[in-house]
Image 1 (spheres, rainbow, N blue to C red):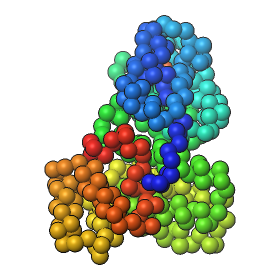
Image 2 (image 1 turned 90 degrees about the horizontal axis):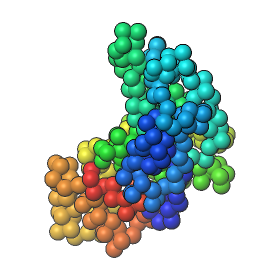
Image 3 (image 1 turned 90 degrees about the vertical axis):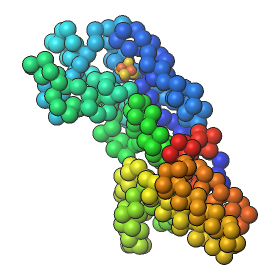
Image 4 (image 1 turned 180 degrees about the vertical axis):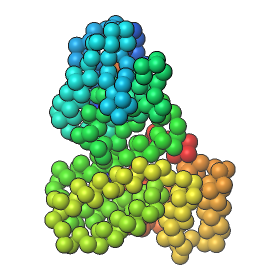
Length: 321
Ligand code: SF4
């Protein structure tokens, strides 16, 4: 998605209880106002409740993870002989196959089915093992789509993690559109060029490594090169940008305005970047001024940079970081 293209609504898997469906073991829900009231305007949610889908009723006996944290079992908390591990894993694999058009997934944390990490795995002594595990459904689903951006609802309350997740979702959707139109070497190079400053903000080292990788693209079949490139890009975008790396990118971008701006405007731009770096103002402040100047002094290469608007502006994700 570039700053100039219209925003499509990416399809996102989500634990159904987060949308307010009364599917939890106790007949309740875990409605997330962030997902329902804010993100839902820009994402098309595909709700799934794996426990209901495999035939566990509502309300039901809660299940929990037990055994080896590297290969836990999901069993009834009062009737441990009731083992639903295989059923949850099979449903995860099946849905991962059917829903291959998703651009992300928001999972309910701590659930033995949906949790992404640190789900409690109970031991014979009645205490959970250190570290925990993934929920059975989430693990099976993710194994089929390792690059898919995923996040737990609770972690989305952190503004940096939230911004990072939405950045990855829209980059993923952008790549899907590219694949749909047909992968060519030029298309991959264009995609990379548009994501250059985003990558520089999220993972400066990967930015250099991917640049080298693309230098060699002429020797490869784009159908093989593309997925390998994208895997590395998504790995890199998983790193959260910091005030330091964002400031570095802002500095680079303002360099394109050096000749166009007078001394006072340049000083003002620099002051805002410094204030952002020091934590005095949020990212949206220097970015807004930067965009203002680029509107007055358009630059074709900068205008295509996804970094300027990697997700819908109305989500205000950069007001909070
Ligand atoms: S956490 Fe997952 S399995 Fe549990 S109620 Fe929510 S959607 Fe269903």
